[in-house]
Length: 364
Image (cartoon, rainbow, N blue to C red; front, side, top):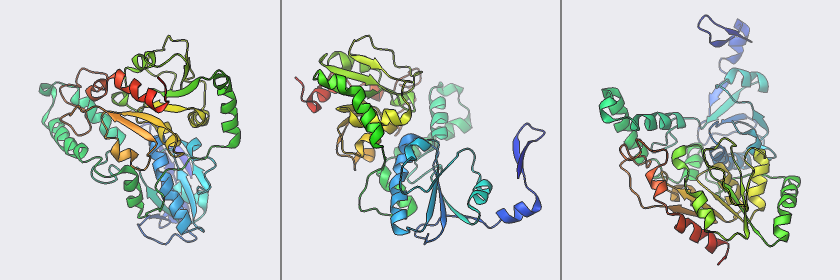
């Protein structure tokens, strides 16, 4: 099998007849409840960090039920899956490439694909979400009939988007029901010890360490008032910022805030969240790394209802304003059209967020 560029500039694969025959009949769709004994399963989920983590209880339960099954995981975030004892192989991502997978495993494979437009009740893909947001920012007179129809249908999808608990939706799609409902992340002792050493100086000064992950995968899930929150917290705390160095959140000027965005790799950031006293964030993947260890977190929600995400994570305090938007995802066609922050996020007062941080850390 080789790759060439066709006349339209597209990368395509060329197989000879023998390779085509080998591929045909070797790729099978995973069916709920099927016996996976001695089979090769490819779990495909290439969305965000949190999405990858929400698939881990499915993998763990399938491995428990069928210990002789070999499970590979195709993910955009392979570091999240490192050291996971239930994952036998981590596959490179890209376009769905069953042919390469058949050659890699040398036989039949079964594919459990979480990259579908909906898990259940209208859970939509990120690409559809972004297209909807782009349309909502336009004035109604700028929309054609097809775009208006898309908005109408998308509203019904979003309205029912999180009626089902998200972790349950993943398990239901695979037809499993684990006794323990949580996600699984496996830090190494070396990772934890290294980050413990990094914050030991703050601890020696009796300072409480708060990790802040201020940005998420969407601007409309980000909280714009973290500077105001930090100003209301005693200077005896140390705030460590993690995330993308190109995040829009402005660099704070307070001396007790250290900007580590871009300085840490993903697993280092994850380890830092696990050794700190508190994690503050929006709905982002690092939240579930810490929540899976039953450690205290404060997560801010606007477009999404926290209950659907946090049912099995009691250590997380999910804060959300009571602002109601006309679209179930929380993006209002009028209020959000000229805004870079969702009204349901800006309505969450910094004083309220700060008060909960003080309470969780038992600070006066």
